[in-house]
Length: 121
Image (tube, rainbow, N blue to C red; front, side, top):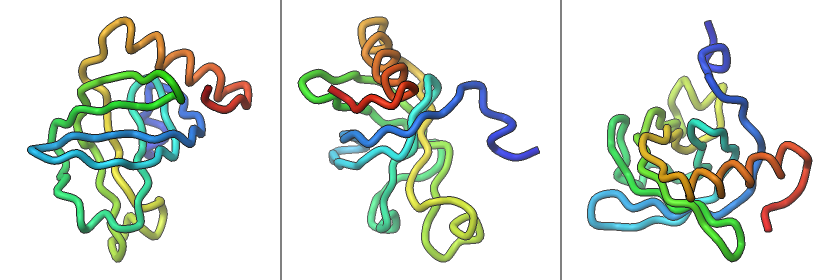
């Protein structure tokens, strides 16, 4: 069974900025895709970031003049030179583990617009 077969939520392509706070540092990434269950952060230089599978991070996903906050756990790290990198883009997969209702509304709106081919606000 492939990873796509195990997913509970459909992914949509979204190009948005994401701030991730892990430990005592904050990093800014761009998303590759997002779903109601999580997102993938694209980076060609994943080896310079301190994230490992199982790390819990704070996420802020920016939708122009508004944003959604969530807690997430790192569920996948794809680094250059690994067998996974031959099949998947480089970066980090995060699963949302705690999202407040008002933040969920922003996420859901962003996902719905992306499904219809609309850019973030």
